[in-house]
Length: 200
Image (tube, rainbow, N blue to C red; front, side, top):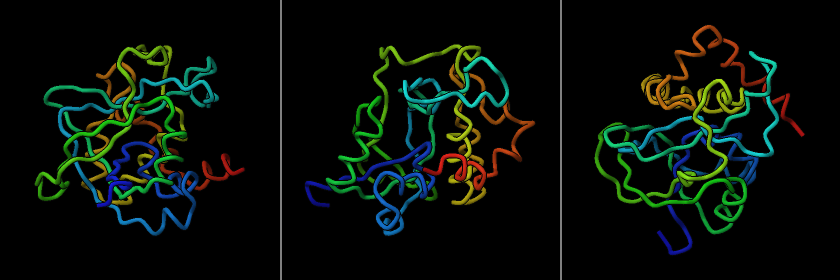
């Protein structure tokens, strides 16, 4: 690992190779080697409200469906992600994309063996940021972001997908996403229609 390269872990839309390709280029994303990992003592939740997100209004008509995934320190919690090597150009582009987050360095563990692998970089919002919202009646996930993350997670394997579902919460940090959306899991697997919707 050279000084201008780091191990970066995606845990939301970056679980989907096509989404990463939108930022670093399709060829660059396809050339990456990806490793399923676990981050300990952090919780994944959809509590971030980006200014540029436009609400889906799929389930409600009040513009609440525009939340992005985030992680925050939580003793005893854990979530799974996908790590890959990112070079200086990748990081420049990804840092712009993830402008609501800071890039932190934390330990990471192999998803299968549970062995500690060293230090990786993750994007997490400062806990006192003004764009965080913890009320589910005011903020729900952007539909696209759920589709990208869950489709990407289940592509890796059934066990990985199930851990994504078991460790992903709504804005309150208590309600599991998969429980809230239990009646919409089939349309949430329709990646093709979402890719078409967001195609430029």
